[in-house]
Length: 381
Ligand code: HEM
Ligand code: SF4
Ligand code: SF4
Image 1 (tube, rainbow, N blue to C red):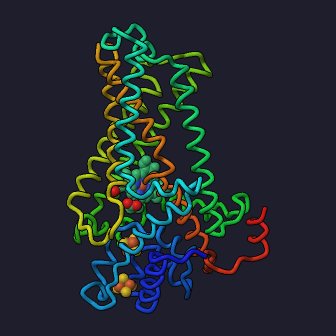
Image 2: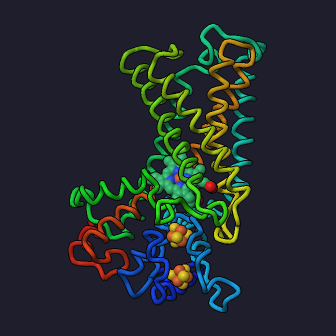
Image 3: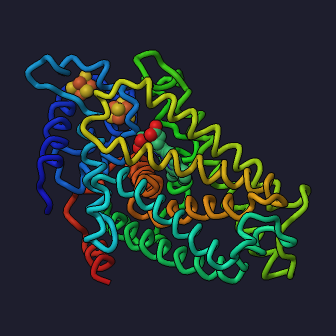
């Protein structure tokens, strides 16, 4: 089993916390910790993905620096999370992309936008800066867009699925069909409501400073639901196009437009709020993690929405070509970086919360325990 500086530090802090237990009311991490006496790599990976980095346990800890134990649970968990995103990445060598993530994502976005602009300007010639009768499909044909984004989308889906299977197996979960759906439902509910950003007493978490606040929870909800609505807009647009032979552009009272506008607004308000909180936040509980990864993800989400809404407004003007290239470049970069950037946190956190629901309802640890015959067989299959 893997043993690194990060897994060793996470195991050290958990062993001290397990003797102290002062923070057991704060969040799922401490309740999951209390079900075990030892902390191997799989166990600390699980606990790291349960930690919501609210900072409460750091601000309350009597062993935090300058104490000689120098305990900083959220920092240990955040640094380990960053390491294990790379460990579970598929294909494995691409896990290196979690290092200097903000830098390569920014460079990629510049390259992709430039390529879109150069290719489109070459193909449309003097028409690049003019309005088109059939809006953006006059700039780039629908089939080219569908082919390019379809191929990238399939790769992203494959990479994310295989990464999640690796994590699922490390978490020793059985075949999904053998799960108890009441327990799965509880895990999904805790993920969707971001239960563990409520500070443990419903007053909110210690982010961006020590005063309890629900701000991060609310802005994350705008971001999450904004993203889901934008996804719904694209899906309904695809169904209308291929299923009902109704190509874009759609009127204001149509599902793709309504989902797109509401989702776009959510994806601007949420990431802007999260960025503002991040600027004010105390960096100590976050540890030495890749801030660039969070920031580049937030900026990509926000720009995807802002340029999408801009495209809707500029559709019939001479700026449609350049706006379309910027929008497509940002969205393609977001897609390409999904399996190798902050986006993966949603899946690993969801799986960790499902494990936690199973463990707490069955009152026994699963992750990090010796494998049962059934689990070994499932793993081998
Ligand atoms: C199962 C679903 C999800 C859960 C449980 C979840 C949970 C969390 C938590 C606890 C954080 C704060 C700690 C950290 O930075 O890792 C966070 C950060 C973040 N999440 Fe999610 N998330 C989910 C899905 C999503 C989705 C689908 C999106 C958008 C596409 C998203 C966008 C973000 C962003 C942008 C941040 C960074 C915020 C910051 O840096 O302050 N999340 N998420
Ligand atoms: S973080 Fe500090 S106060 Fe909280 S349980 Fe751990 S050792 Fe105790
Ligand atoms: S930072 Fe918050 S979520 Fe993470 S272990 Fe501490 S109290 Fe729990």
